[in-house]
Amino acid sequence: MMKLIYGILLGLLLIFNTAFAADAGYGAKGAINTPQPTVQEMLTFAIQDEYLAHSQYGTVLDTFGKVRPFSNIILSEERHISYLQPLFTDRGWDIPADKGKDMVIKPKTFAEALKLGTQIETDNIAMYEYFLQQPDLPSDAKTVFELLLAASNKHLQAFSKW
Image 1 (tube, helix red, strand yellow):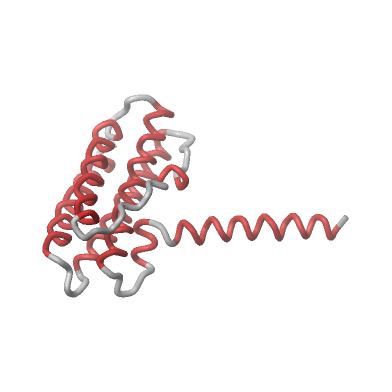
Image 2 (cartoon, rainbow, N blue to C red):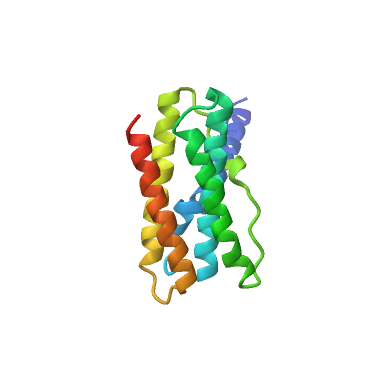
């Protein structure tokens, strides 16, 4: 009986460690954990993070209805994704699939939703600041990263008002 319990616990531990590792390699968290990312890696982490924000804010709207600031910010996230897509296609790279829904946390309260939004935007800001410090950043990527950084700062201000 004890072997069965230990086996179940070990299995759960492996599942949680695998899920955590996937999260740590996705979006802003993956970006910050990547020393000297390539342009393709930066663009991939950026679009992943925008997918994640879009999916998270969509989950908030599905849970709590059309509430501000999420109802406004989700539209910005769609624009952010559309700004990043040409940076892939112009280089002949495939646009990464949207796996943001796989990473979403369903908030139990609106206060928790605001905290999640604040964390997403804080991580997003740190990611773009990190990217803008990278040497030999192409000008088109730099321009988009600066634009998205400014937008994330506005989103963070919007969350702090609630």
